[in-house]
Structure formats: structure tokens, C-alpha cells
Image 1 (cartoon, helix red, strand yellow):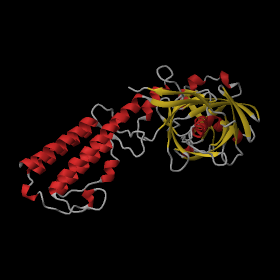
Image 2 (cartoon, one colour):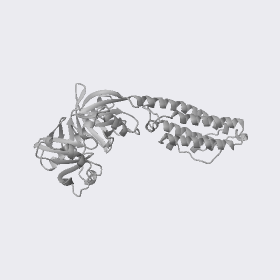
Image 3 (cartoon, helix red, strand yellow):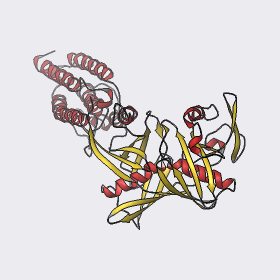
Image 4 (tube, one colour):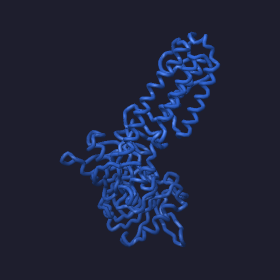
Length: 438
């Protein structure tokens, strides 16, 4: 290897090592997280892109090896620091070997590179020497970007802004983000802990949407991801409007959830959202849509056996699975704290279930308590209220509009027996805060 080629080899390999070292010490979650800056990429993506470019331009363009480059895969990559270190070591070895075999008299040759290796823009002839210089320039530019990305991620990790809200006592922590790949489950477990964290029934991640005003992901206190929450979405509507994320059109906003787009009507008084009328969509009764291991539709008086007891429950989906038990006595006397967890994890429910206990006191009034999947008993459960009203109407117990009493307050539910179910109730801010992460 002559002196010039050896100099290129040494500096390129040093930059690969510097790229790797810039990410040392980040957790896997931090390594794969994008900063809260428009157009930003994760540290892992930037490093993978630099390695891909170096491999294409050194091995392919400068040394004439036959290889292909997958740029979209570079920008979609995720992985661990150990994987990144192995990739860096392997690439350094390949570059050292290839440049060691490069004839110095060929440095001024100008082969026409293929578009596959080139990257962005139309390829044009470059000398092998220019290709090596490009690798150094490209890596140097991205090293600065990578160091900034690391600093931003560390700063964001140190203090995460959140807002606590509640709807009839069902409380949630709201975090705005553009990063879908973060370990939100772990964060939810930490933040929602009522002794060691902030304390809440769930973590609501507010994301940008291409289909609606905002997109939501909801994580229960145990870290499991929920499909929807009536109380949580009502809080989200107030949050989105009053924090400037959504502008109501004819009083309405839309929310993208796991199973589709929800429509909500904001009731505004004195410039603020005092209540929300939320369309929960139509109830679903097919056993596979709940899901429940039953052979009837609708699933009414479905027998559940456990601990020598048998309960007859009505099962349906309100975007999430529910089982409703009707009792003659006031719901406050029902042993929900002992029976709830057993029904939640009953083998008849492949994805677990929200278990509601309901007492109908009048055709327009009910009491409900709900053991929520992944949370436990909550002061209120919006989708649980909807499920209880739908189940009661299927049995002919109630009319089209019912006021549902829960420990956290009252909600109104409307269902005409064939269309969407509507949930009406308040939502309130509790406080804003910052969560310091280790």
C-alpha cells in the first residue's frame, strides 16, 4: 500500500471508529430514537448510512468491486450498539484489505459508477481518488450531525415534558412525540407507577397523523398497549385543541387510533373545551372481533367458569374487548378486586378483557365498575361504560341515552341500537411536569 492510499485508509477507518464511538454509552432505546426535530434520524440510522456510503464508495467505486447498496434499508435500520460495533469492525477490515490491493496508478481513473452505489442525484464520472476523498467528506459531515443527535437525545432523555389529565377520575399522562419507535411500554410502567413515578392509569403518546388531526398510542400502567380509551380520547381532544395541535372544523376533530379514525365533537365554553361528545364507533359482536372463544353471536349470557363459580357475561368490542356482568345489588358491594383479575386473564379471552360490573337502577340510569385490562380497577372507564350500556340495551334494560354513575363521576352514553355509540363527558388538565430519565 503506497503512502497516499495508506493515508486514505487510515483516516477513513478512523472516521468509522469515531462514528461508532460517538454513540457509545447510549441505551438501545436512545440509539434508535429520533430527536424531536423535523427530519431528524436516529443515531443508529446515521451511522448505518455512513457505513453504507463508505462501503459503496470505497469498495464499489474506488476499488471496483461488484456490490449493491440498499439506501432505503439504511434509513429504516434499527439495532444495538454491539451490532453497530461489529459492523464497524467488519467494514474497517474490508476497507483496509481492498485499499491494500488497489493499484496506485489507477487513482486517477474515472470509472462511471452505477446509480445503485451512487446514492442521491444522477451519477457522473469521478476518479478513484475523488471517491476516497468523498468518503472522508461525507463521514466528517455526518459525524457532526451524529454528535448533535446524541446531545439532543441525551437532553430529551434527561427531561421529558408531560401533561397529566383526567376524565371522571381516569387519569393519563400525555407526551407529544414524533418517535414511534421509542420503548413507550417501559416509560409507561415507570411514569404510571403511583408510588415511584408520577402515577396514572396510562400513558397517551400524541403523534402526528396523515389521516386525522392527531394520532394516539395508549399504553396501560403495566406497559401493555391498549386499542382505545373513551376517557383518554376525550382528554386527548381537549389537549389537542387547547395546545394548538388541532383546529376544530364545525366543532369536530379526528383522532387516529389503532383500529381506525375516531370522530369527536368538542363542546366549547369561554374559549375552553368543557366536554367532549366522542363517537366510539359501532359495537362489534362477532366472537372473533372481541375476541372471545364463544360460538354465539351476539355473546349474551356466556358462561365463565372459575374457582368453582360460574358467571354469565355479555361480551363485545368497543375497539377493545369487554365482558359485562349484570348484578341485582349495588356495584359497590361486588368483590371486583378479587374477581376482576381472574376474569381479565380467563382463558376464554385470548387478548385478556376489560371486566365490567353493572347495575341498572332505571331505564336511563346505571352504575358501573370496571376492572381494566393492564391497569386494574379505575375510577372511570369510558369504553367500559359504553360496553355496559350496549349490553343493557341488547337485553332491553335501557333506552337510547343512559347516564352512567362511576366512582369518578357521571358519563352519558347514547346508542340507538344500530349505529355508533357516543360517549359524552368532561376532561380536565391536572398539571404539567417534566420527567427526568436516567
